[in-house]
Amino acid sequence: MSLSASLPLPDAAPASGTTDPTGTSTSGPARPPVRTERRSWGSTVAGVLILAVLLFPLYWMLNVSLQPAGSAVATSWFPLSPSFEGYTTALADQGGNLLTSLLVAAGSVVLSLVIAAPAAYALAQFRVPGAGIVLFGILISQMIPGIVVANALYSAYNDLGLLNSLPGLVLADSTAGIPFGILIMRAFMGSIPPSLVEAARVDGAGPIRAFVSIVLPISRNALITAALFTFLFTWGDFLFALTLTTNAEVRPITLGLYQYIGTYVSDWSTVMATAVLASVPAVVLLVIAQRYIAAGVTGGALK
Amino acid sequence: MADLAQRAGGARSAARPAGTTAPPARQRSRWSGPRARTRLLELGFVVPAVVYMLAFFGYPVVQNALMGFQEYTTRTFITGEAPWVGLENYRAVISSSVFTQATFNTVLFTVGSIAGQFVLGLAIAVFFRRRFPLGGLLRSLLLLPWLIPLIAASAVWRWILDKDTGVLNQVLGGLGLDSNPGWLTSPSLALVTVVVVNIWIGIPFNTTLLYSGLQDIPEELYEAAALDGATRWRAFRHITWPLLRPVVTVVLVLGVVYTLKALDIILGLTQGGPANSTQTIATQSYNLSFQQFDFGQGAAMGNILIVVSLAFAILYLRVNRRALDE
Image (tube, rainbow over all chains, first blue to last red):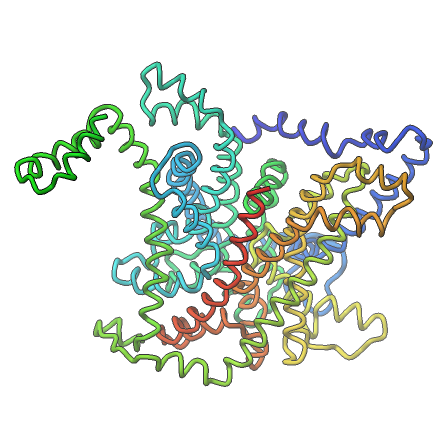
């Protein structure tokens, strides 16, 4: 809800900035406007072609998912008589796994924000002893391969009874969201003028109240970006699902899909329907929160 | 002021009575009272994150380092015993025939993926720098292949590349090329195919980062260069490339670090096969631990991967610091 409510603002911002078609006038009044127009539509055609090539696999995923099951020999190019058989089977087989993924992803978003937001703020604004070491550790953590973490967690989880459990997966999957969240929110929170918070502190608010009532509302965009990416990371997690679950009790959708393609596949429309269902969150989030996504990709790496 | 006096008192440590009363007084002045309370609260902001990072990154690294020297197998889970074996795991891992192949594959996979992603990503980023209707929309749709789960992406590629019924061989057959190559099932083709798919996955990331770097280059520079007659390729060589260098370095180093540890896409497409032709150090570490249940050897393999990644990490941090300084 809050996402769509915030849409008018972010969408308006990039439109007036970089992608405004009328912005072509900056290339100089000397150029006849008609020609500019034609040239830029030519670029649009080229852009659509580039995209068509790059997005073809995704189209194919959708196309195959809508073909009737069992028509293996030659898949037709368009789902002219769409069949939802694949989806029916996929939902029957994988419905529970989709729910598991949703719960794990939601849990990881909450955990990551609760842990990362205060830390990001402290690292950006307080003089915490050892802040440099903490930041260094976060950067280094990006180099640690997931398989190393999984290798050690497996035996630890075995002892703690966390294998095949939602909390176990939430904790392990947050290894993506927490460092990313700290980096991206710290970059933003560093730009909050300290005077805003000081004013509240003078009025008698402690650091926690000042954080909750002032810093968090101002940082809404950074929080949304961190939450979005944590959700996508966790939803798409495969390694921890593969190594930290051993039975069908708690099985994320990525693992369900892997087991589909691991065996000999005879029913590709069901497999592709599952792949489409697994991709839905990415598509939905990209459409409704485009600006936050672009900000997250660049912010996480460059800040 | 109080602190100074305290310190002076501490210096006279020979005086017993002063020494015994000073520590509690000093503690109180540092960790009580409203200011000290605030400091403690502020520290509380970071503590959960530090604890988490230590538990989920620090502990695994230390534990893996130890496991690399232990015989750590399924028996360990029953008996609780993991005998020390010194360098035996490393000896076994490195002398196995898979290791040479996995190392070779890791290098090819990383270099091939990064080169392809970067060149195509940069070309597309430069293209999208033009202003044209729907440019912003197309650019953001471009991110989709990167945002969907890697396993979903590898599932569809497996079907596209299927030897007998995949659409690629269908099209090639229609063009009269009836050789029906097994893109993912022939040992000589599989690695190249996996690299191509991984390039496809990495293009959006490269494009987005490089595009944002390009946006930071002032338009006036190009206008001035155009007045001097420098356009297109020359403008790219003399303006774009030098100014984009910092971003390029970050993109390349991050790309290498992420590609070195890539696992999902290879497991999804080939599971390291056929005949280990797509096995990398990362997938082999997974194999040893979770297929052969030799966690000691898996840890040894993982540690080798860490050392390689760390070499790049040092480069990454240096680059990052330079980027922050600017």
